[in-house]
Length: 104
Image (tube, rainbow, N blue to C red; front, side, top):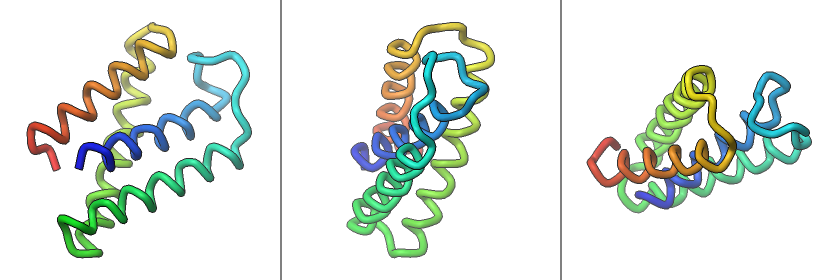
């Protein structure tokens, strides 16, 4: 469960970093590469969640986590003026806490 949530965090963060509106990194990565990372992380997370949930439920869990992470990333980026590494670390800690405390 924790690995699937961390994969989704990585995919969502990769897509956010390719946005021209972010200020965490100076040069944005290629959108095709970041969307590929996002797609692979969603599929891998869905596959890992299949061990615990039926296919439709796992897909809904992936969708809800992606929507939550994108919202959290945008709100945190707007209110926390920190660099990339603390931002990523904060997201990893939040993701692990979400998975371990039963947020799924």
